[in-house]
Image (cartoon, rainbow, N blue to C red; front, top):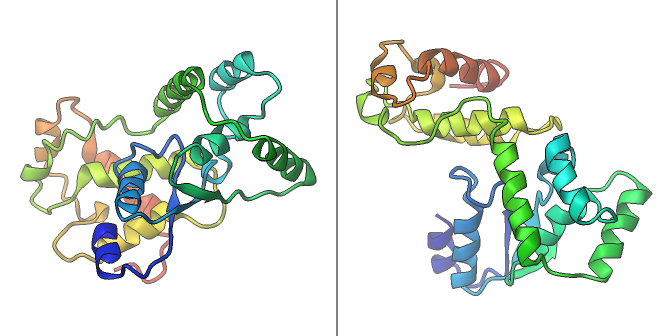
Length: 230
């Protein structure tokens, strides 16, 4: 879609994208793919959500230790913001701040900016691996279930949105909830609550996940609170 928009509207001057090291390879956010499309069209990128709503600041002790052992003086937030700012086609990184201390931290390491180095990239990969282990539904997105769902529910996509939602610190607005609402407007696909618990997906799942039960959780998270949900 982004490729189509930029092709039809060459007058667009820049693209704003959600980019952070956790979402870089995420199938729903598609940060890397969108960044590459913007770069192909020679449109500079403004980054939003570099610390994923604060999620990439409040890490687990194990992940936090990896970064602090490498550089005790660097804030955890600086790793995420520098990661986004290190991309060649990024012209600006937007960072929400709630205290003078955060403002001073951000301006200090950006004023004396150093791109993420090879050793830091390896540490970020390790941290990403740790965070991925915290996901709620261990779906590998093999897509074996899709062909056999009589309700045409895109199970891996819904699980992906649910995992991100459960992982993300609540802020009052849910990007994943908005994505889900948009997905649900497509009459050719089923929503989580459309599941009839036939079990066909479970039989095809290599991990034998309790997919119908997880879909109930997805529906409870995204559908019940939504005013005007279809």
